[in-house]
Image (cartoon, rainbow, N blue to C red; front, side, top):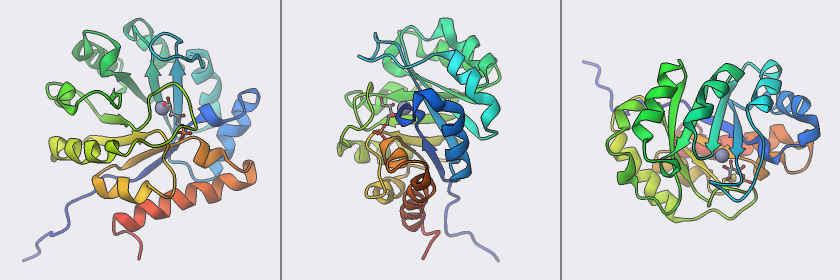
Length: 234
Ligand code: DX5
Ligand code: ZN
């Protein structure tokens, strides 16, 4: 009788962060990473309050939506998040991720995202223990492990994130939840991250370096490192 020995892996998703794109050319940049093989487009929203930087809001999500059919993965680094969830949903987000540290009512925020018909994500800062999501795991479609302190692109990967990914992977068990890592991800650490259990890899500088003609190669380098670690490439 057939017996499955390899556990099912969730699909690998490479998610370039448009925080590293040319802000004056968002439409072209999004089309370029789409054509270059991105699976998701990661959109970093910062409010200058939850994190020490300001990026952009729902109008930018609305503006880039017509430029790609790929998943728009919206990472909200804002507090409070709840007053803006409906606006991000209407703007065309597919996944909306809130931070566990962004307010006292994480459970309510996740319920609100699902009630809007969107996939709900929860993110943890490097200093936040994984126990913060113990009681919301059945309410989420994605867990986002920050491997830098959020606020800026181009920072160095914090190695303790690897262990955290492995612990959260075990907590998730067989639930249909994507496990994403964000911050300092490169082709050099993508393999270790995939091995630890991450299936969604966000990369800003590592994708956008070298200009438009380099995007496809940069995405492919991250993908093949992860695929090799997942046993999908020999
Ligand atoms: C950091 C953002 C990241 C950032 C990643 O606050 O959440 O998505 O754009 O950029 P790199 O890949 O350059 O670390
Ligand atoms: Zn992000």
